[in-house]
Image (cartoon, rainbow, N blue to C red):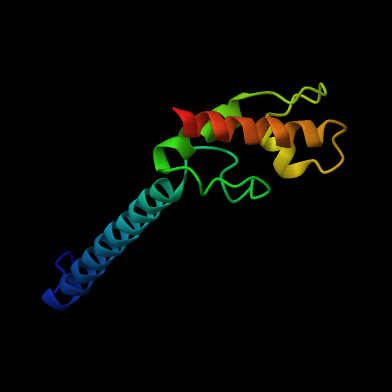
Length: 114
């Protein structure tokens, strides 16, 4: 009674192997998705698409990164605690929005001049 037949052992082994393969496949898929996500991120909370009100196409890739770093690092002057980029991208009611857009245009001009 204590012995198991060969027919009972093979299905268990096959099931374990299938589970291992499934775990590996899922793990690799998750790893690939994370890698893809990292590659797709610009590294900035608010990018060129979010700040479409200002023309970033005059800048090359390096200049765009410089301008976005500055825009995402500068603060809105109304006291809302948002960054300049965040304010321009999300707050249409900011009392200094027009000045912030002008500041953003200046940042783009300065990045182009470097």
